[in-house]
Length: 132
Image (tube, rainbow, N blue to C red; front, side, top):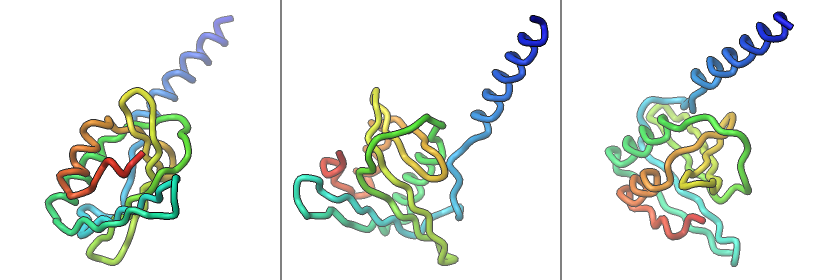
């Protein structure tokens, strides 16, 4: 019985440690531009735009670096592609999430608060009404 308790404690501690270290990682430190691509499921239209304001790109980038790990997600609703000065790119997939959280996916799923995420997108010029 003691062995099972010790194993359970190690398992829980390992999970806490693992999820504490798990973060959304990017290829660069400051994106030059962010491309937004959101298909409209009700038609063949696609909402596309590029955020070229470096300050707005940085704010969106920082908001996403605060994302917390999550399990699973729903259907992909669109994507954000980050472009860096060295030519590297990162694509973050957007998935609607539950409980006032929005799920993003890149090497795992992560959640960010919907209100703050949509606010920084709107400040960057994105029409967030196009995002499901």
